[in-house]
Image 1: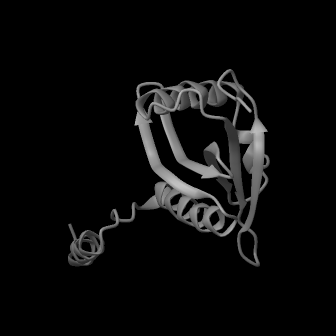
Image 2: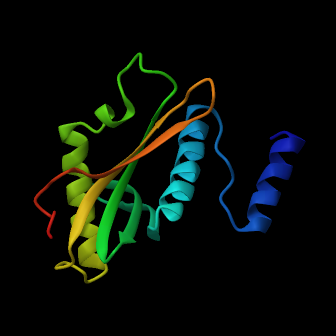
Length: 144
């Protein structure tokens, strides 16, 4: 490990935040931080970050106006592979639904109203474009 990497890890540890990953995972980390800022600014209250359970992972669990929001963050550096939100495939949605059920059961909020949101981030020459797609898709746990 290089001296710089050691210093970065120590600074991250001292500040209480996880060390910044490298490479493509680093872009995902940056997109999640940007998404969290935008969600907070839009009035969401973050309840959990990177919640993991057997079915998968939830980028964010948040609350907006009394509704539990399971938030998936998707980013793209260009549209060559499609728009960011298009990456939330039917299979990915099923994993998110099952993981959301696990979170609701763990938190004893199984009857809480909930929805599934996507934060789509597209890198552009003039900076990232961020869009919050509320109620982006529905599933068996979506309740109002």
